[in-house]
Image (tube, rainbow, N blue to C red; front, side):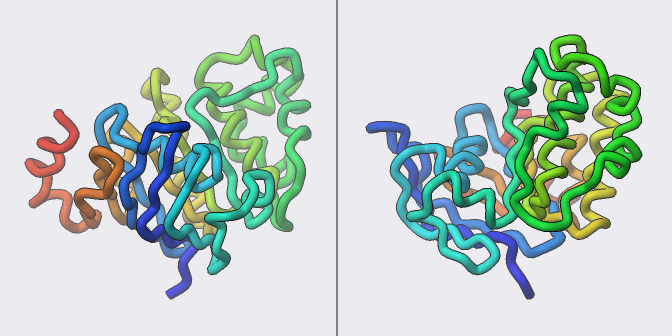
Length: 233
């Protein structure tokens, strides 16, 4: 059993605000897991804490067996971590292809442009269009495609379906499945449980900065009511 990431008793702060209160979770290489919970529960903060973007952190975060809790933020992606933030971070005046060429290679094995365009045909069609001209769905595809260029194998994806048309959501679900088949490890923060449920091996429910429930994909049917109570469905 080889873990891509193991988090133990993770506490984190934004300034004086104590936002994570002892998070414990682990993800094996090649797994897809979701972080579920209401807005403000600590899901995005968990992703940001993994990358050292929250300020003070205590506890343990091992990425591919390497302790990172005291690492500088800029060194953590070099372990093979890619982050797709909720706000996407597309460079609006650069073309699609220029956006794709911008990220540095952090590990061997990143996808080439041909592979990216095969996975995201829309981006090939819009490769010369500036970022500001892309639709929300195309921007989301570009944000995901960009981190695949870097060679990262542990992907942190934050609310990738928010506000997107169903046809785009369906396409992103297929991309997640394809990446899993290629051996990527994926942590999804997702409000759209209908999207996340069939994709993930395991669901971690986060409330008040802690993991309060772990639900395996095989347990979804019998734990639906419990999940609804946590998620406020």
